[in-house]
Image 1 (cartoon, rainbow, N blue to C red):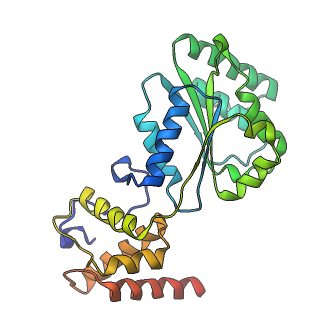
Image 2: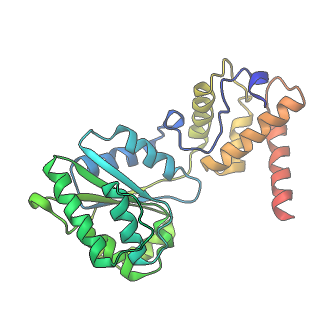
Image 3: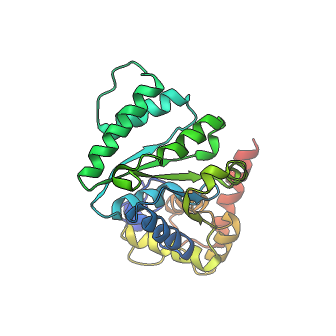
Length: 273
């Protein structure tokens, strides 16, 4: 709606996982390098922890895009809070590329299919990855134990897959109570909110990727933006997107602190209602 007014090719603050909009801030870049190390060196498991809205999904998408060719297939489980037999059946189908028959096989059958596939995959020189997103939602200890046991499949004496757990910080106490799983983690990555400087760089990067020819936010607005959003990328996206919309409606040439504060107050008022 507002793209032509601001002379943009596309909306700069969408929350989709588009690698082109990945901002390589220090925290995110360090996590990306560590996770890439775990995958390409075929480690058992890795952990990515970050609060809601900090960009875990986009980072995993970026990791998938840059991983070396022998890595694959990559299976992402977006809803891990399912019965154990269904989870294993889902993994068996996604890993093998088979079609869903409509019948949930028994746990032993699914595990056998996974093991057979991983052996074949390893013989081709490839290494599978299973990404468990929203891992903090898992409340069944048996599921965590099954995830740990996936790393027991070692065709040729090396792990046949890497399990990447992506979770909010509330998952850390669960790990403390599951030392067998914690010991399998080759790397642990913690995403933190963006600093004031990083927030400004994040906004500039997003605008540049969207085709902006000039700064659209006044320099004095950016510290306010960092303060209002606490450096959380998803909040930055929401606030900036609405500010651009309102700026378009009011025919503003740039966006300053007043516009950002007004949008933030409106969002707070709607949330309160």
